[in-house]
Image (cartoon, rainbow, N blue to C red; front, side, top):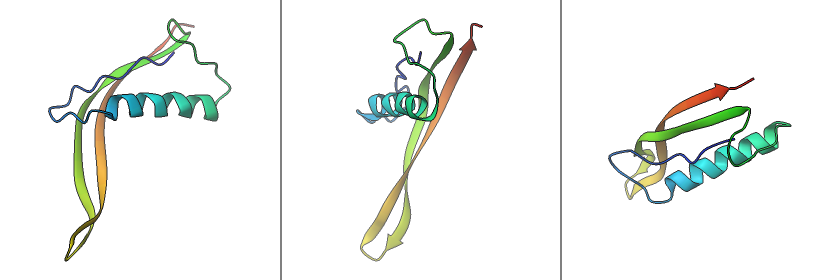
Amino acid sequence: SIAFFPNNASLVQPTLSQSFTEDLRNFFQTQSRLTLIPTGGDLRIEGSITDSRVSPVGVSTGGALSNRLTITVMVQFTNTL
């Protein structure tokens, strides 16, 4: 089971928590044979987003060509088996 990751960063981006949690769940469903259940799984992943920042990657005379989002995540993994 993968719990919802709340955004506890000082600068909160409204959709970051939902996007990160869903992407993490999708990663485990597509890259493993594990079955995802809502709560109480034998393997549990939970945590929170503790920091996020946006920095320019490519810069031109007109401004940033692209930006990089960097997030810091605190994760607790529990294996009940």
